[in-house]
Structures are given as structure tokens and as C-alpha cells.
Image (cartoon, rainbow, N blue to C red; front, side, top):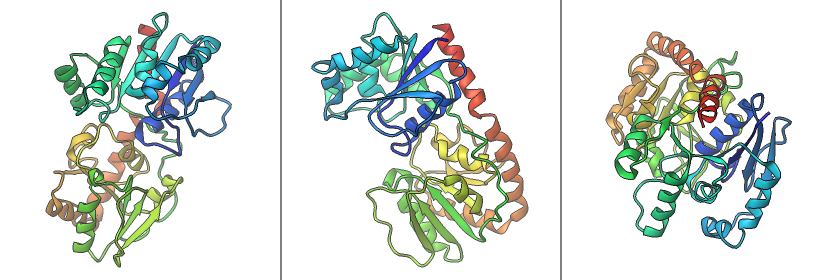
Length: 335
């Protein structure tokens, strides 16, 4: 069995989308590859993958490619992988692109390749992308961005979801609950969501996550904090709302859909898998009026909401990890 080394900054419960993808993919490929994951923290004990922890330092790209390069080289030598897949451009995408005898793959999340003020960081990103055997991104719009701004041609492989964990449950949804799961930052549309909550006092808004933004005390807003068992939260909600300003290929939407929930979400990112009016409702970012209208419409029209829920579950099964992992395995084999 060939060995696959994956590298990611953190693993769940830490981090965000890229970390969840690395963990889900690693466990899904364990029957095809001997999977090893290099990270700085996180990851549950498992019999399916082997974890290799390295300390986190400031300026990791420079530190691990220079004075601590031997730490990385020793791990690579011990594993002797056929493929190294970095799920983050910096630091690991740059560090591993110097492994000329091994095929290297780097996944781009979006924020790691957007314009930077400081040229040295852009230099490292360019080196990581152009020095790798293959570049992967999760969305079509990000692929176009990479082609136009970095002159690289990535493979587009969407994120996956574990439809065994995220599935419709027997819980009766709590009446009139609108659920948000994600980081409490402006980019996730938290401020717009709070404005919608003020205009819709007849509904409860549950916010599950953490971040720098302080959630004000409103009569109909409940701050649940960080919650590991999000599948249970999805099951209890009437519908889910994700008003992000932009996303790459957000996994939270797939999780909610796999649980059989109707979504109200913004276009960029969520439109990669939501067909507006069929398995969810898409609105423009920053558009509080449309956000309020979509929430009210689905809450007041149960028949429509039930139809969207059914379609959402069907759509999510197309992104089950068994399907997505096979796409990655075929790309690895092509190298």
C-alpha cells in the first residue's frame, strides 16, 4: 500500500474548512493509502491515520524551510511517501515543493492566494503553486482566479461531507429556530444576521461558533459558543442561514443539507452546490432586506421548506466523502 503524507496547520476541533477537509479526506482514503498527517495540533486518536505533530512557530514558512528543515526531512524520510499533499499554501505548500523526488500536491483555500501587501509572502505562494506537481481548489470561481492571477491551472475537486454523521435525525425541530454555524467575524455576515434578527423578533436565532465579534444580548438571539456536535444542532433547527460575504466552497452548508435542512445563503461559494429555489435560497451578500425576506418566506411556507429539505439531502449525498475521496485518489494516481 502506497503512503500518503498530508500536511495541514491544525486539525479539528481547531481550524476551519481546510482542516475539516484534510481530516475527512485522510480518513476516507485510509483503505487506499497508508495515510500520515503532519500538523501542529488537533486530531482525535484513530486507527486509520498516523499523526505527526511539529511545534508551531512564528514565521513557520521561513523557520521550517531553513533552520528546522531537518525536522521535516526526518519525518519525510521515515515515512517515505509516494505523494505529499499540503492542504495549505503556506507554510507547508512552500516547504514541501522542494521535495523534488516526491510528487507534491497543494490545495488552495482562497484567502491564502488573495492579493497581499507584502511581496515576500506572495513570492512564497508563487513558489508553492508553481513548484508543486498539482494544484487543487474547491470551486470554479477560485480556479478562474488562480488562472488569471497566478497563471496556474488547478484541478477543481469539491469538498466532501460525511453523510453518515450528518444525516436527518429523529429530533423534532425546535419551532421557529434559525441556526448559524461558523466563526464570529464580519466576513461571515454576522452583522447582517443580527440586523435580520432584530427585524424578525418572532423567531429564535441560534449562533454556534466563536470569534472576535461580540454578540449583543438580544431577546431572540442565543449565543451557543463553540459546539462540537453540530449535527445535533442542525437537526433541532427549523432552517439554517449562512450570510457570508464570500466563501470558497463552504462545508457548513453541505453539512446542514446532509442533515436535511433548508438553507438561506449568499451566492459566492454556496452557489457552487445550491441551486436557487430548488435545494436552498440564495441572496446577495450584505443584502439584509433579501435575507429577512427569504427567512420569513421559508418559515411561513412549510410545504416549500419541506421540498427544499428533501432536495438538499439528495444533493448532499453527491458530495459524500466516498465520492470525493475517489476523485482525489484518481488525481494522485495520475501523478
